[in-house]
Image (cartoon, rainbow, N blue to C red):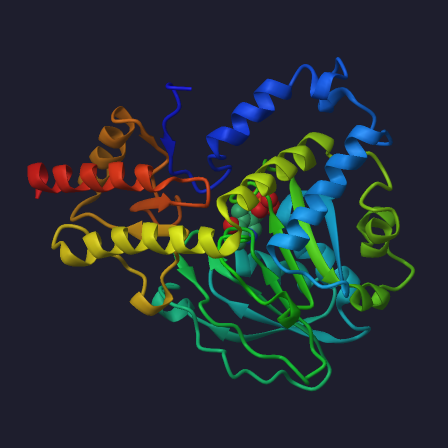
Length: 363
Ligand SMILES: *Cc1c(COP(=O)(O)O)cnc(C)c1O
């Protein structure tokens, strides 16, 4: 696959080349069945094995206990913005939200349809260049849950420590769409974790939800079947036809993550990739990173050049050199290098060489 280039897009993002090749190899004829997985019934042995493998891989990689359910829901992470309050907001109650930017805001907006939303912390005043310190946050009595966004894809910030909710009885809920399985986390600290797959673990349109079984019991009756967590739990994510191909891709990506040596190894590589990039940016007078050093994202490295004209040139020339998707989110501008699990160190090294050369010419 010599024609593959390095794609730094924020999502959908590049998948590991061995995974793409395996999917290609099996596309028309899955394990000698004579049809592809995309064409096979979800009630058959082949797909059941795929679904089981995806779940057991995730369970193993993230060290998830039997107190949790692993389900797949369509509608991306954005549907979870609604499903969470719809299912988990206590009657007449309120929920707490930490505001760290675009996605956190979208989540809070939906919750307002189902109860009161208390914004417990925000970094809006400084244009979301940091994570508010909520490590020692104690929830208010009666709070339905605390919601946060573990990695802020647009602003390039990330939580490196989470509030400890032990003993409060209030579940911690996290949108991990852009850093799921990029590092080790203690799942036991969370009531519910969700992640749209298209950044780190698969194609778009599907959302991984990991939730404490007991939380699903909160849901009251008057919720549409397809929007109720218990429907997915009781039917092993197959109440209706699930997105079989997306789940198959997640199975392949998680196979690959295990082959890499699991999340300990993956985290080390991700640390290295982000460190070398931030080091270059911090050393240079040409590049500049708006995010506070202690809250920087290891997944989305945002930086600015001296002028917008140079930024435009940078994106264009990078593309001509086989590096795609470096334009920052339209709401913030600048450059964004998304370096999820599938981005190899080699891709980052190529970007660094390009950045040095670009600075030498235009700096
Ligand atoms: C991309 C992203 C989303 C949106 O995901 P969809 O699957 O498009 O709904 C939500 N939250 C975060 C943190 C994201 O990065």
